[in-house]
Image 1 (tube, rainbow, N blue to C red):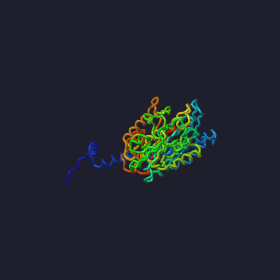
Image 2 (image 1 turned 180 degrees about the vertical axis):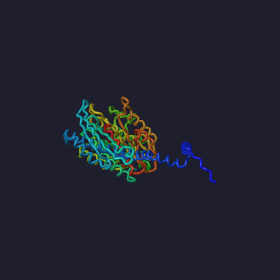
Image 3 (image 1 turned 90 degrees about the vertical axis):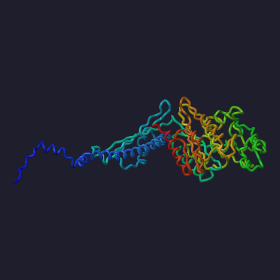
Image 4 (image 1 turned 135 degrees about the horizontal axis):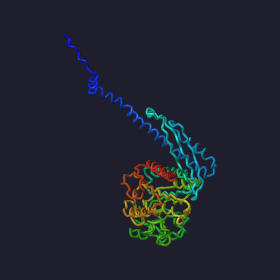
Length: 466
């Protein structure tokens, strides 16, 4: 006989359902999957927006500079600024994901400080792939770029190592090619003839200021002569013994010059302590020591320094590039003399006739020094072969003096490049001299191009006021 079933109340069924855990994971996952997908999708969509905005910023920066150059040179009128900015932007920006693009430019005439400004804004939208699930079918973004001219100018001194070791591993042609590309970058930053100036300082153990300066009052002639020696070691490094005292101390024979006619333009380090300063030459103790720079009777003076030259006209750019092409490797490494003369080319007036600075303008002064070796020699120390800590110490002091702040501001920016193809130690002094983030070490000749490209990008930012 079957027992009758006891009815289960609805309240009991609810209690049993609440205690039952079968299938809870699936239920929870189904509840959570939508927000999970939304968060993941949001990251994807925001990445697309970030990429689009970065590309738009780059295009706006370039368009703003080009419009500024056109306007300041008279190629367009103020009424053309907005339309020209849109044309330049359209040729530079090709992100197909972006819709509703809007670009607008405004021009502000010269203010009380003589500054003119062009500001270009850009807006766009990205159609979302995932966030539309959460009710966001598109994401809007915007960015802007502003260029100011007439108020800021730039002067760049490029000290380039032309020592003998630059003739190996393809370093010299790589440096020449990269330096010329930087000149093109600098030319593009100028909107008037006075906006960007460049000097080229080829250096080895010494530098050449050119025979055209032989009657300059800032030259010192008491050390003019040459040294010879029967000792093969000294004969290999006769350029080291460019003074009478240095020659005789090392067993050489000093032959005084009969006059300025045999001088080829070479000068060595100044008397201490003027060798680490930019003190204008006012006395014999601060003048620049002229030397013959002969080794076994052969003149091995580097190419002449090219003083500050406007990088605006095509003719001047060709002149600067020709100077770079004329560089020939020879001699030992004396980075301080390259750095010192780079500094001097930034100094208005003597010794190289740098144009005076207009007090109504701000100037960004820059030194770029490239060297493939470690310091081996200067007027006072080293043998041209082995590393000289004494030369390094003079360079550190020199860089300290360059970086002295005026009213809390460092007026000269320093970039350094070490091309280390010989597995030398990292140059502590080049790293010390460079401003933070402006030391570029490379172990290959190919790395020279990357270093100059990075410097060019950094200098470009100095010409764009965000």
